[in-house]
Amino acid sequence: MTTVIMKRVLKYIAIFVIVGGFLNSCETTELDLRVSPNDLASNQADPNLLLTSIQLAYGTNQQTLSDRSAELVRIDYMFGRNYFNNYPGSTLDGVWSRTYSSGGNGVGDFTGVGMLTNIQALEAIDAESDIDYSFHLGVAKTLFAHQLMQLVDFIGEAAFSQAGNATEFPAPLLDGGQDVYNSALALLTEAEGYLTGNPGTQGAVDIYYNGDVSKWRKLINTIRLKAHYTTGNMAAFNQVIAGGNFISSAADDFEIKYGTSELQPDDRHPDYASDYTPSGANIYQSNWMMETMLNNNDPRIRYYFYRQVDATPGADADPNEETLACSLVVPPQHFQDGGFTYCSVPNGYWGRTHGNDEGTPPDNFTRTAVGVYPAGGRFDDSSFGTVGLGVGGGGAGIEPIFLSSYVDFWRGAMAASDADRANFLRSGLEKSIAKVQGFAALDGGADLSFEPSAADVTAYIDGIVADFNAATGDDKENIFAEQYFTTLFGGATEAWVYYRKTGYPTTLVPNWEPDPGPFPRTLLYPQNEVITNPNLTQKQSLTQQVFWDTNPASPAFPVAN
Image (cartoon, rainbow, N blue to C red; front, side, top):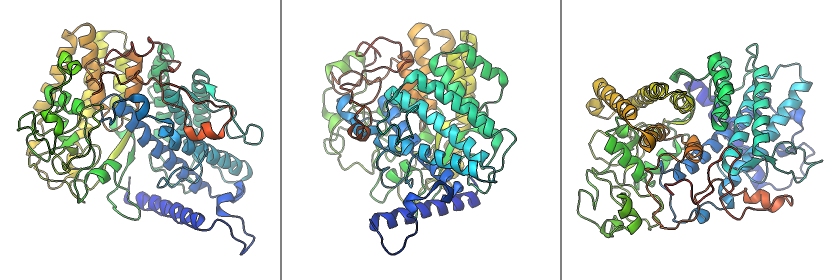
């Protein structure tokens, strides 16, 4: 994102903050008869601000969905031993409200109403105006279509046919997952039509592609690929591939770009803002993710994680009850039986294992922090320093959403032969590692002599592909899945989808709790919607399966849980 664009985005964010603060402080006013800023007629709203709001709502949702998905599949650490208790009905309240304008959107997301409401306002403005707002509608409907698919992926259903029509349907029914997917695909066709002919932005800020309509068209086809891959529609998937107009190089990657401003507003990567503080790091990294990369000698590990110490209690340092209590504990039987790491990963990779619900010890300057990719932190040059404000890349990272490397893994999963799968595995790794290595320059104080060389990277990729070709059965699937999950670090929304579709990798570390309850196949309905919608009854478990999940019911599947 250029500096000019960032300044304009921040200006719009500031407007939302100021207006939101005004509305919170003044419940009613009788000073004049002007229309309230919170109740503008459609022809009074600024279409550029509406589009900005839609983009921000979508981006905030991506952060939430990626984090929850990553926790479930051990890419990130999950706190708490019981799945049902970990993911209550409030988990997706914010995502739902930012999509539909149902309830408050929460402090700090800068969106007064949800995506659908603003899209309807844009449609009304476009219908009545001599100005062509096709760009706004094309972008907005693309994002909304993807959001609808994700709601299905996370809760099994979504509101569509009765959504956005409070007069006729004050309590909208939810549509089935397959129907919502079909409707989302139809929305993508509408969006594509709006973007035909390269419409102008009319001054709107495009925080993703800077007004490049060709890139939005590629994104539309990439979302189609995602839908066809998820549902197993090989013919439709191959048809999009044959067209060639999808995200296939890093130049077209779809991502949120962050800045380095700490205040007014804080536009840094959220993980950087949490980990790079005067009081140290606040996020625990996943032991499974770090150990998998360490054992594989993955060249991305120094970019993903920054170690503040060179040894971990219980692994290559003496156990320490004060800073890592579990380092003194004998692992429970279900960890011993599988040979899984219960507490400590060596070489200073100080994190936590899935489900660990211990309290927080004084380890903020010893636990491993997020690195230079994707959060814009420090590159790990074995200096074993500490984190702090402004250190490393200052938070100027990204939130990956659709990367070209992800698409190669989809193509590998859909490939007709193991030889083709191996080729896409290789291509996906090449693109992922190249992108990750490009972030090292963000950390101007790092000793980049610790970066893996080109020969190191080639040897790693050759070794992974050779192991994949030599393996059979579960071993082959585990290699592919582990590399896919590693590539998804930082933008892992699709990881939970893959795990429910395939059950791989079976190498995932178990929950700390021997009986954590059935593994979630979907999450609960948003509780705020359940409370206000008499046509909706909350689920009693997390075992309802999405229409594309045709595997055995939990707890028999996935086997690693």
